[in-house]
Image (cartoon, rainbow, N blue to C red; front, side, top):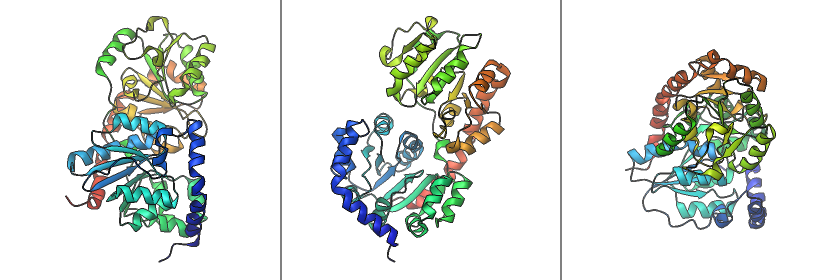
Length: 422
């Protein structure tokens, strides 16, 4: 059956604008949005030799999606070591994180832009047997070209907002065609399942990868050093924060009589300088990890805040914290960040109310006493000032995280039939 006219038009238009792609990508590289040395990967070119044998390709656009793929990658490596693994993403931060997190032998490349020739070059070079797309990455050219090459496809831990569903519903025939390319669709939650089914997707189960995974790694030697340097001070962690949230959390913490240590991990480490300037303007004494480095000589007795503006170390700082204030929940438009990384390490979570991206997780954790929601900075300060409000959050968060393992096993059973024969 021929694709709907809307998809044919999309392919035509993206093909016509493709000659301008190198210029657009070059301009993005100048703004720090692309990795200049790897722009050819975005055009589907190069990237090294394809490993021999069957290959599984996993795609997650950004840091959160990439991290959520790790349980699948680990299971693939343990149960099917014969399979080559290729992971693609679309952002520089995700690429840097994957370079640290991927197991030996697994490859990372930037995903091709969704134009016909770039997609074709990518698929013809890598020849994947199975493609696993995580969350909301529905690129028509890429998906339909993969299907035309007989690549088995799964949409895993799928998430679709109401706004996105409304947009796709204006081209319902196109949405149905794209979704029908997937052999397995595993949404994160019931709301996404209903939206995907309404658009013509065949929903086969549920799986939220962001609830899964092993505790984040940390340098244990550095952890012991920092614990000794901090001593008995209570540590409050502001994790994955966005602009405006650091000053709000710092103001709440500054008013506490006990003088805890605030550790701030900005979502984007390059904001470290700006965050430091804002906190100094509040009168706080601080140190920056990007300046001190591993094994630094910070005098924690003399500082109020520690700016952890490095990449891939948040597992270290969760282990130091008695409570985590999650960023993204106080900044409108972000949608909140995943509380499960903290929960797996037994750290209770406080978030703001703007958690649409993880609403079901926060709701369930709050119902079980594993997380608290603060309406604003004033409410956050009140929670932090009341030990009874946070007592028990950590153990309950750990228990909630441990209860998620069964869902992963059910999802894995649905994906196993798509794997290439051993």
